Amino acid sequence: MTKTTDARKTKSGAVRLLLRRERGATIDEIMKATGWKPHSCRAFLTGVRKSDGDLIRQERSDGKTAYRIASDAIAPL
Image 1 (cartoon, rainbow, N blue to C red):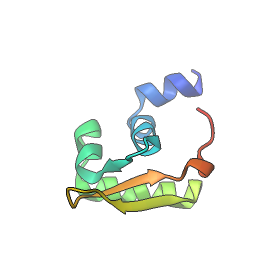
Image 2: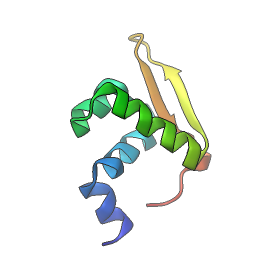
Image 3: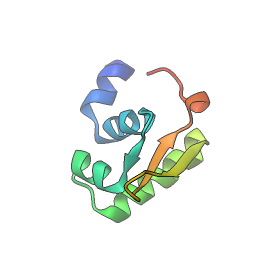
């Protein structure tokens, strides 16, 4: 299985793709994509922060908090 295939078929891969978007992903978007509970989403984000380093937290215009992996920290899939 290649990294690209893995990213499409696993929940963690799907979340990482969401986090790589320019607008990132909210906890609600991660929950919808994975079926995880909020505490599991936050735990995953902690793991991303520890392994990938730069996890950016930003507020969207609608007031929701989104998270994304900094573009300079993104390794190719």
